[in-house]
Amino acid sequence: MNNPGPGRVYTETLIYAAPEQFVKDAPYQLTIITLDHGGRLTARISSENPRDRVQIGDQVQFAEFRDGIPFFRKS
Amino acid sequence: MRPVAVIGIGKTAFGAFPDRDLRSLAVEAGQKCLEDAHVSPSQVEAFYLGNFAGPSFVGQNHLAPYVAGGMGITGVPCTRFEAACASSGSAFFHAVSAVGAGLYDVVLVGGVEKMTSQPTPKVTEILAGAGDMCGEGRAGATFPALFAMIARRHMYQYGTTREMLAAVAVKNHANGAKNPLAHMRKVITIEQALAGKPIADPLTVYDCSLISDGAAAVLIVPFERAAEFESKPVRVLGIAQTSDQVALDQKEDITTFKAVKEAAQKAYKMAGVTANDIQFAEVHDCFTIAEIVASEDLGFCKKGDGGPYALQGCTALNGPRPLNTSGGLKAKGHPVGATGVGQICDVVMQIRGEAGDRQIERHSLGLAQNLGGSGATAVVTVLGAVA
Image 1 (tube, rainbow over the protein chains, first blue to last red):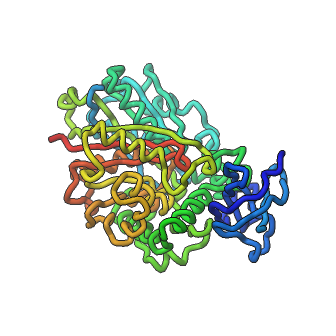
Image 2: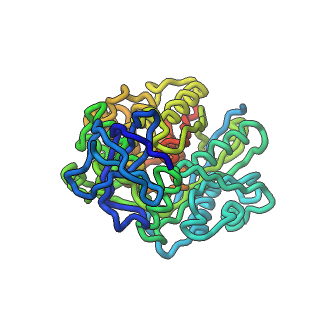
Image 3: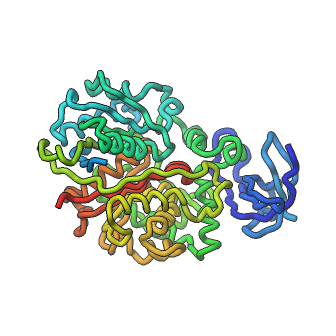
């Protein structure tokens, strides 16, 4: 999988009620990122620390893929 | 296309019914509908059934002939339609199209879902399958999360507030309390709604529709034949089904459902009406934000004004344009596959003047809006009294 590059938070939510396979991760932040290279991507925020959560408009950079899921962090 | 009329409606109560199976619910709704229409099973020429996930929820496939057989209907085409939460709206659209085209005269349309036999995390996972499981679903999106992201963006672009979302829940609970078939007949306050358990920020449990069991059915015939039957006909004046991308991240502006706007425009044109003419509507409030967006997309208020429109009471039972007089998906319940046809039943009840404690005064022209997923399927139907 290719590095999607940096982007900006288009929207976000903090999920408390997770689907069965992600119950252990909750609460976790899910976002839609507008990528600098064009297009949008649904991605998670890499840190579970509440102070690293992102808001609409924040610039973010790609962190890693975990089990095929793209994770980003605040720039 | 030949004009079509609804001559029968039937619904089960919506709720959690551990002792009821999928077929018994669907059969109960179908039989009530046939009785209401004064039609016998042998007169039914085709059966259309909306169901989202019977195979996942209860392990049953081949649902349409299975349900029809339970009503004594055999020897005719019986087909299941799946379009997420718009499954039975889609079944209704295709049934109306077939009768309109002259393929059949007497058609039964049902919708059913049996959801409460699974624990909530499993239900959440099954519902997530209405999204893109290679993208948003794989990343851990739930349906509340997708609508929470829509709400966040709507708040950011238009200044919509938590209180405006809560106003939708309070109003729909008040209406549901007056509906004997509603899942939750409990009045709530705005304070309660705001203090609800968080599900996906900014949505709390009070912003989310209910996980319900239930079924609904309607019987349609060509309008020219409606007088032959003993029941009170209601005209299908306009109907349209449209589509959009499944994944939320593939939509340019997530604060609007393009498919709903397009379906509404087509249905209004077919009916020869404008949004202004619509006196009341059942809209798809799977989440409170969805009712706010629907009021904008259907043209009841300006883009971005859906929040204040709800907060100011414009959509209340005694307001200028009541929305979800049944209690909506929020309080009436949301047995996914039954919802679209259930909405048609609720609009027909108002038009017939049979809505009891929640009967409104201006009730000759109503609308039903059924949404699948985060907007990939939309069905809009305009129904009117026979002049």
